[in-house]
Image (cartoon, rainbow, N blue to C red; front, side):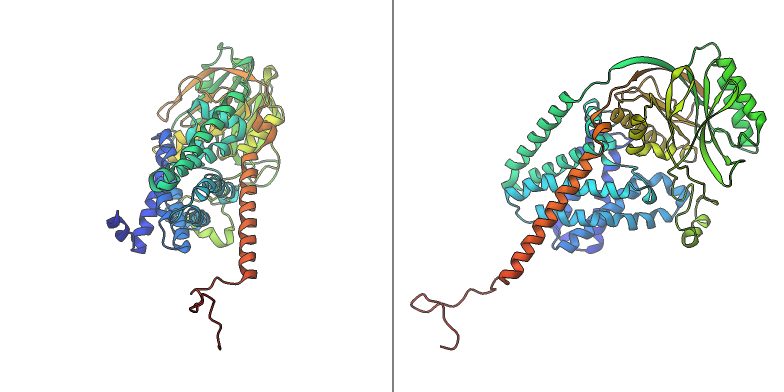
Length: 524
């Protein structure tokens, strides 16, 4: 142990260790998908920050760990952003600096049982605040939220219906804190065990209390995944492949056909021939077709990504324009300053335009659908608002073809399970090149995935449910609770500092005493 402490006295070695410790949680996400590892993945990072000699060093440990975490969960962006990903991670990693300081504040040295117990509430609240800030679309969005690692765990999905992915993140961090206390603070093992027991009891009660989705109908949804299409005229070739696959659905009695993101590379107003071909597919299959157009619009300036519903008579007026765009991938923030990013990676050469509101579409057969485009499936508030607005089915149209041989396709597909569990609505995740997946109202996967090597169609029998989950009703209440905890902490720290200032500093040396045991008075 002392050898490790001596090795960590070097600031560079300590920073490297913090970055590696921060990267560990990535193993809990797909593709490794070691979901159980999430409950101990933060322990090395916590122990390192706890042992920091000063609060400033603990903040650096938090910063370096945040850098490692962000690089690890976004490593698949390296071919596109190159060195820019490290710059982003350095800037965004600073969000964890206060969290590292809090770790030392509550667990440093020999913490009392009371401080250790408080850490079980304060440190998860601090982590949740970091996730809240970085979830802002302009900072990259909520990719890699710690609770999202639990997408395949049935009890965790039930808890997501109560407090969303936020509640899962809070509980995962709380367990990590308790484990860190158990292995490092002998005097506080009792409150750590009590905290674990209380967490288990609370989650069990929430799991038992949360309502099950009541299935009240079924629809047949077809997903069309064309696969990789390269070379010249790839847009025309992709459309032809999607058309060929969709014709195979004739006679399959489907209610809706879903194509992936950017499945149509031309505005249908400019290409009425393509609109007629999709309408013919709708007539042949007896189902509306939801396509995704990535093109310069004919009726207004700019490039949009739009979900467009096409029926037997052509495009309906049901259209959704993507609202939350991918930074650098679909627009460059502060292009006048950061436009040079286009020279070092695959950043957007021209900013795409944003939509202004979410849309619930009336598809055929009385089905109400709520479309989301790619990056938007990571945002729990968007799917929640669609459920509030009456969507029967959530639809994510995506394309991760630029990251085909990375962990990104599997991780993106897993997010739909959480959105489904949170809202009590089934969700379809349809892609161009995989992974495509469908989930029932409680987040359980329906049928097999269409992997990254597939060029095929698949029909899914999807159960419908229309109850209101606690998360849809009450929203992001775990985040609000975390902010209240931190506000109370700031108030308590401020009051303590004020009392110290009024009473004056503690004397560094006790006063000398006379032989009569009375304090010596200067000048006598």
